[in-house]
Length: 320
Image (cartoon, rainbow, N blue to C red; front, side):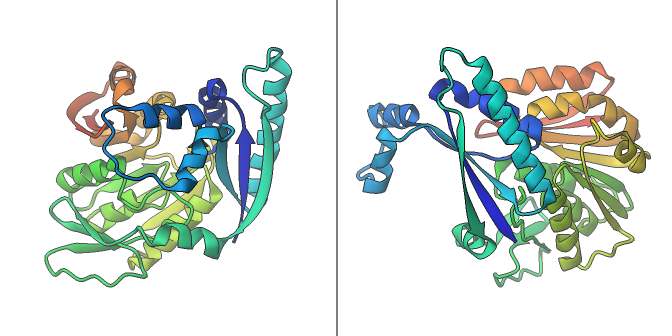
Protein backbone atom coordinates (compact mmCIF):
# COMPACT_ATOMS: atom_id res chain seq x y z
CA UNK A 1 0.00 0.00 0.00
CA UNK A 2 1.09 3.55 -0.69
CA UNK A 3 1.01 6.14 2.08
CA UNK A 4 0.73 9.89 1.95
CA UNK A 5 2.92 11.87 4.32
CA UNK A 6 1.20 15.14 5.21
CA UNK A 7 3.41 17.83 6.76
CA UNK A 8 1.28 20.60 8.27
CA UNK A 9 3.16 23.80 9.11
CA UNK A 10 1.92 25.76 12.08
CA UNK A 11 3.30 27.56 15.15
CA UNK A 12 4.08 26.39 18.68
CA UNK A 13 0.80 28.02 19.78
CA UNK A 14 -1.10 26.11 17.10
CA UNK A 15 0.06 22.58 17.92
CA UNK A 16 -2.53 21.72 20.58
CA UNK A 17 -5.51 23.04 18.62
CA UNK A 18 -4.31 21.48 15.36
CA UNK A 19 -3.77 18.05 16.93
CA UNK A 20 -7.18 18.22 18.59
CA UNK A 21 -8.86 18.96 15.26
CA UNK A 22 -6.88 16.18 13.55
CA UNK A 23 -8.11 13.73 16.19
CA UNK A 24 -11.68 14.84 15.49
CA UNK A 25 -11.11 13.88 11.85
CA UNK A 26 -9.85 10.45 12.91
CA UNK A 27 -6.08 10.88 12.87
CA UNK A 28 -4.62 8.97 15.82
CA UNK A 29 -0.90 9.63 15.64
CA UNK A 30 1.34 12.60 14.98
CA UNK A 31 4.99 13.42 14.61
CA UNK A 32 5.63 16.90 16.00
CA UNK A 33 8.72 19.01 15.29
CA UNK A 34 8.91 22.21 17.32
CA UNK A 35 12.04 24.30 17.66
CA UNK A 36 10.88 25.76 20.98
CA UNK A 37 10.68 22.29 22.55
CA UNK A 38 14.12 21.41 21.25
CA UNK A 39 15.65 24.66 22.53
CA UNK A 40 14.15 23.92 25.95
CA UNK A 41 15.72 20.47 25.78
CA UNK A 42 19.13 21.96 24.97
CA UNK A 43 18.85 24.46 27.82
CA UNK A 44 17.96 21.77 30.37
CA UNK A 45 20.77 21.99 32.92
CA UNK A 46 20.01 18.50 34.18
CA UNK A 47 20.29 16.90 30.75
CA UNK A 48 22.47 13.81 30.58
CA UNK A 49 24.03 13.56 27.14
CA UNK A 50 27.54 13.61 25.72
CA UNK A 51 26.79 14.16 22.05
CA UNK A 52 23.91 15.37 19.88
CA UNK A 53 23.87 14.40 16.23
CA UNK A 54 24.16 17.24 13.69
CA UNK A 55 20.85 16.22 12.11
CA UNK A 56 19.11 16.72 15.47
CA UNK A 57 20.74 20.11 15.92
CA UNK A 58 18.82 21.25 12.84
CA UNK A 59 15.63 21.05 14.93
CA UNK A 60 16.72 24.22 16.75
CA UNK A 61 15.84 26.26 13.65
CA UNK A 62 13.07 24.15 12.13
CA UNK A 63 9.61 25.43 11.29
CA UNK A 64 7.00 23.93 13.62
CA UNK A 65 5.38 21.02 11.82
CA UNK A 66 2.83 18.30 12.58
CA UNK A 67 3.22 15.23 10.36
CA UNK A 68 0.55 12.58 9.81
CA UNK A 69 0.39 9.54 7.55
CA UNK A 70 -2.72 8.66 5.55
CA UNK A 71 -3.41 5.36 3.76
CA UNK A 72 -3.59 5.45 -0.03
CA UNK A 73 -7.24 4.43 -0.23
CA UNK A 74 -10.68 6.08 -0.28
CA UNK A 75 -10.66 6.66 3.46
CA UNK A 76 -7.26 8.35 3.25
CA UNK A 77 -8.53 10.58 0.45
CA UNK A 78 -11.58 11.56 2.52
CA UNK A 79 -9.38 12.35 5.53
CA UNK A 80 -7.08 14.47 3.36
CA UNK A 81 -10.05 16.48 2.09
CA UNK A 82 -11.20 16.96 5.69
CA UNK A 83 -7.73 18.13 6.71
CA UNK A 84 -7.59 20.67 3.88
CA UNK A 85 -11.06 21.98 4.77
CA UNK A 86 -10.11 22.17 8.46
CA UNK A 87 -6.93 24.13 7.66
CA UNK A 88 -8.90 26.56 5.51
CA UNK A 89 -11.33 27.17 8.39
CA UNK A 90 -8.48 27.66 10.88
CA UNK A 91 -6.71 30.09 8.57
CA UNK A 92 -9.90 32.09 7.97
CA UNK A 93 -10.46 32.57 11.69
CA UNK A 94 -6.80 33.31 12.48
CA UNK A 95 -6.72 37.01 11.60
CA UNK A 96 -3.64 37.67 13.75
CA UNK A 97 -1.67 34.75 12.28
CA UNK A 98 -1.21 33.13 15.71
CA UNK A 99 -1.22 29.61 14.29
CA UNK A 100 1.41 30.04 11.57
CA UNK A 101 0.92 29.49 7.87
CA UNK A 102 -1.35 26.40 8.25
CA UNK A 103 -0.28 24.86 4.97
CA UNK A 104 0.06 21.17 4.13
CA UNK A 105 2.75 19.62 1.96
CA UNK A 106 2.31 16.07 0.69
CA UNK A 107 4.65 13.28 -0.40
CA UNK A 108 4.11 9.60 -1.17
CA UNK A 109 5.79 6.81 0.80
CA UNK A 110 6.01 3.17 -0.24
CA UNK A 111 4.86 0.65 2.34
CA UNK A 112 8.28 -1.03 2.17
CA UNK A 113 9.98 2.21 3.19
CA UNK A 114 7.40 2.76 5.94
CA UNK A 115 7.94 -0.74 7.32
CA UNK A 116 11.71 -0.56 7.32
CA UNK A 117 11.61 2.58 9.46
CA UNK A 118 10.19 0.77 12.47
CA UNK A 119 10.69 -2.98 12.02
CA UNK A 120 14.23 -2.79 13.32
CA UNK A 121 12.90 -1.64 16.72
CA UNK A 122 10.17 -4.28 17.16
CA UNK A 123 11.65 -7.33 18.87
CA UNK A 124 9.95 -10.17 20.79
CA UNK A 125 9.23 -9.42 24.43
CA UNK A 126 7.36 -10.88 27.40
CA UNK A 127 4.40 -9.14 29.01
CA UNK A 128 2.60 -10.15 32.19
CA UNK A 129 3.01 -13.73 33.37
CA UNK A 130 1.61 -15.62 30.38
CA UNK A 131 2.18 -13.76 27.10
CA UNK A 132 5.07 -13.15 24.73
CA UNK A 133 4.57 -10.77 21.81
CA UNK A 134 6.53 -11.15 18.58
CA UNK A 135 6.42 -9.82 15.01
CA UNK A 136 6.16 -12.37 12.20
CA UNK A 137 9.69 -11.71 10.94
CA UNK A 138 11.35 -12.61 14.25
CA UNK A 139 12.01 -16.13 15.58
CA UNK A 140 11.02 -16.71 19.19
CA UNK A 141 9.97 -19.71 21.25
CA UNK A 142 9.16 -20.13 24.93
CA UNK A 143 7.21 -23.16 26.11
CA UNK A 144 6.14 -21.30 29.25
CA UNK A 145 4.45 -18.49 27.31
CA UNK A 146 1.52 -18.03 24.94
CA UNK A 147 3.01 -16.54 21.76
CA UNK A 148 1.04 -13.63 20.28
CA UNK A 149 2.22 -12.79 16.78
CA UNK A 150 1.41 -9.24 15.70
CA UNK A 151 2.23 -7.10 12.67
CA UNK A 152 0.78 -3.64 13.35
CA UNK A 153 1.43 -2.22 9.85
CA UNK A 154 0.27 1.40 10.23
CA UNK A 155 -1.99 0.66 13.20
CA UNK A 156 -1.29 1.38 16.84
CA UNK A 157 -0.49 -1.66 18.93
CA UNK A 158 2.80 -3.54 18.99
CA UNK A 159 2.41 -3.99 22.72
CA UNK A 160 5.50 -1.92 23.44
CA UNK A 161 3.68 1.24 24.51
CA UNK A 162 2.84 1.47 28.21
CA UNK A 163 -0.89 1.83 27.54
CA UNK A 164 -1.01 -1.45 25.61
CA UNK A 165 1.12 -3.33 28.12
CA UNK A 166 -1.02 -2.13 31.01
CA UNK A 167 -4.16 -3.35 29.22
CA UNK A 168 -2.60 -6.75 28.44
CA UNK A 169 -1.65 -7.20 32.08
CA UNK A 170 -5.20 -6.43 33.25
CA UNK A 171 -6.74 -8.70 30.58
CA UNK A 172 -4.51 -11.58 31.69
CA UNK A 173 -5.67 -11.26 35.29
CA UNK A 174 -9.35 -10.48 34.70
CA UNK A 175 -10.38 -12.58 31.69
CA UNK A 176 -12.48 -15.68 32.32
CA UNK A 177 -12.60 -18.74 30.10
CA UNK A 178 -15.34 -18.37 27.50
CA UNK A 179 -15.69 -14.58 27.82
CA UNK A 180 -16.79 -12.42 24.90
CA UNK A 181 -14.81 -9.26 24.12
CA UNK A 182 -15.60 -5.95 22.45
CA UNK A 183 -12.39 -4.14 21.44
CA UNK A 184 -13.17 -0.48 20.71
CA UNK A 185 -10.39 1.38 18.90
CA UNK A 186 -8.74 -1.96 18.20
CA UNK A 187 -5.74 -0.73 16.19
CA UNK A 188 -3.67 -3.82 15.36
CA UNK A 189 -6.15 -5.98 17.31
CA UNK A 190 -3.55 -6.92 19.90
CA UNK A 191 -5.86 -6.65 22.94
CA UNK A 192 -8.75 -8.72 21.61
CA UNK A 193 -6.41 -11.27 19.98
CA UNK A 194 -4.62 -11.65 23.31
CA UNK A 195 -8.03 -12.19 24.89
CA UNK A 196 -8.85 -15.04 22.50
CA UNK A 197 -5.44 -16.65 23.08
CA UNK A 198 -5.99 -16.38 26.84
CA UNK A 199 -9.32 -18.21 26.66
CA UNK A 200 -12.05 -15.84 25.42
CA UNK A 201 -14.64 -17.46 23.16
CA UNK A 202 -15.30 -14.62 20.72
CA UNK A 203 -14.31 -11.03 20.02
CA UNK A 204 -15.55 -8.09 17.99
CA UNK A 205 -12.88 -5.54 17.06
CA UNK A 206 -13.87 -2.03 15.94
CA UNK A 207 -11.73 0.85 14.70
CA UNK A 208 -12.46 4.17 13.07
CA UNK A 209 -9.88 3.37 10.36
CA UNK A 210 -10.64 0.79 7.69
CA UNK A 211 -6.96 -0.15 7.44
CA UNK A 212 -6.78 -0.90 11.18
CA UNK A 213 -9.78 -3.23 11.02
CA UNK A 214 -8.18 -5.06 8.08
CA UNK A 215 -4.88 -5.33 9.96
CA UNK A 216 -6.63 -6.71 13.05
CA UNK A 217 -8.32 -9.37 10.92
CA UNK A 218 -4.99 -10.37 9.36
CA UNK A 219 -3.36 -10.56 12.78
CA UNK A 220 -6.14 -12.78 14.08
CA UNK A 221 -5.52 -15.14 11.15
CA UNK A 222 -1.78 -15.17 11.94
CA UNK A 223 -2.69 -16.48 15.39
CA UNK A 224 -4.92 -19.23 13.97
CA UNK A 225 -8.10 -17.52 15.14
CA UNK A 226 -11.13 -18.30 12.97
CA UNK A 227 -13.54 -15.82 11.39
CA UNK A 228 -16.28 -17.28 13.58
CA UNK A 229 -14.29 -16.30 16.68
CA UNK A 230 -13.14 -12.87 15.50
CA UNK A 231 -15.19 -10.20 13.73
CA UNK A 232 -13.91 -6.77 12.66
CA UNK A 233 -15.74 -3.56 11.77
CA UNK A 234 -14.65 -0.03 10.94
CA UNK A 235 -16.37 3.27 11.56
CA UNK A 236 -17.23 5.65 14.37
CA UNK A 237 -19.92 4.34 16.72
CA UNK A 238 -20.40 7.89 18.07
CA UNK A 239 -21.71 9.08 14.69
CA UNK A 240 -22.69 5.88 12.87
CA UNK A 241 -25.90 4.55 14.38
CA UNK A 242 -26.00 1.58 12.00
CA UNK A 243 -22.55 0.46 13.17
CA UNK A 244 -23.50 0.99 16.82
CA UNK A 245 -26.52 -1.28 16.27
CA UNK A 246 -24.49 -3.83 14.30
CA UNK A 247 -22.19 -4.56 17.23
CA UNK A 248 -24.97 -4.38 19.80
CA UNK A 249 -25.02 -7.02 22.49
CA UNK A 250 -23.82 -7.67 26.01
CA UNK A 251 -20.12 -8.47 26.23
CA UNK A 252 -18.20 -9.87 29.18
CA UNK A 253 -15.24 -7.56 28.59
CA UNK A 254 -14.75 -4.24 26.79
CA UNK A 255 -11.29 -2.92 26.02
CA UNK A 256 -10.77 0.69 24.92
CA UNK A 257 -7.20 1.94 24.58
CA UNK A 258 -7.92 5.28 22.90
CA UNK A 259 -7.59 8.85 24.22
CA UNK A 260 -9.23 10.68 27.11
CA UNK A 261 -11.79 12.69 25.13
CA UNK A 262 -13.03 9.67 23.17
CA UNK A 263 -13.27 7.54 26.31
CA UNK A 264 -15.43 10.21 27.92
CA UNK A 265 -17.62 10.44 24.82
CA UNK A 266 -18.06 6.64 24.76
CA UNK A 267 -19.11 6.26 28.40
CA UNK A 268 -22.78 5.58 27.61
CA UNK A 269 -21.80 3.03 24.96
CA UNK A 270 -19.73 1.18 27.56
CA UNK A 271 -22.90 0.87 29.63
CA UNK A 272 -24.87 -0.21 26.57
CA UNK A 273 -22.49 -2.98 25.57
CA UNK A 274 -21.19 -4.39 28.87
CA UNK A 275 -23.15 -7.06 30.71
CA UNK A 276 -23.86 -6.60 34.41
CA UNK A 277 -20.77 -7.67 36.33
CA UNK A 278 -18.56 -7.47 33.24
CA UNK A 279 -15.13 -5.89 32.95
CA UNK A 280 -14.30 -2.56 31.31
CA UNK A 281 -10.62 -1.81 30.65
CA UNK A 282 -9.75 1.73 29.57
CA UNK A 283 -6.36 3.20 28.75
CA UNK A 284 -4.58 5.76 26.57
CA UNK A 285 -5.00 8.26 29.40
CA UNK A 286 -2.24 10.68 30.31
CA UNK A 287 -1.81 10.94 34.06
CA UNK A 288 -2.92 14.59 34.13
CA UNK A 289 -6.39 13.63 32.81
CA UNK A 290 -7.00 10.55 34.95
CA UNK A 291 -9.41 12.22 37.37
CA UNK A 292 -11.45 13.77 34.57
CA UNK A 293 -11.87 10.45 32.74
CA UNK A 294 -12.53 8.42 35.89
CA UNK A 295 -15.17 10.88 37.09
CA UNK A 296 -17.02 10.62 33.77
CA UNK A 297 -16.90 6.81 33.75
CA UNK A 298 -18.05 6.52 37.34
CA UNK A 299 -20.87 9.01 36.79
CA UNK A 300 -22.66 6.49 34.51
CA UNK A 301 -22.49 3.70 37.08
CA UNK A 302 -19.10 2.02 36.77
CA UNK A 303 -17.17 0.95 39.88
CA UNK A 304 -13.39 1.14 39.77
CA UNK A 305 -11.49 -2.06 40.60
CA UNK A 306 -7.89 -1.05 39.92
CA UNK A 307 -5.70 1.66 38.40
CA UNK A 308 -2.23 1.14 36.95
CA UNK A 309 0.07 4.05 36.13
CA UNK A 310 3.38 3.76 34.31
CA UNK A 311 5.60 6.63 33.20
CA UNK A 312 2.76 9.12 32.87
CA UNK A 313 0.17 6.77 31.31
CA UNK A 314 -2.80 5.21 33.07
CA UNK A 315 -5.08 2.22 32.60
CA UNK A 316 -8.04 1.30 34.76
CA UNK A 317 -10.35 -1.65 35.30
CA UNK A 318 -14.04 -1.09 36.03
CA UNK A 319 -17.08 -3.24 36.57
CA UNK A 320 -20.76 -2.42 36.14
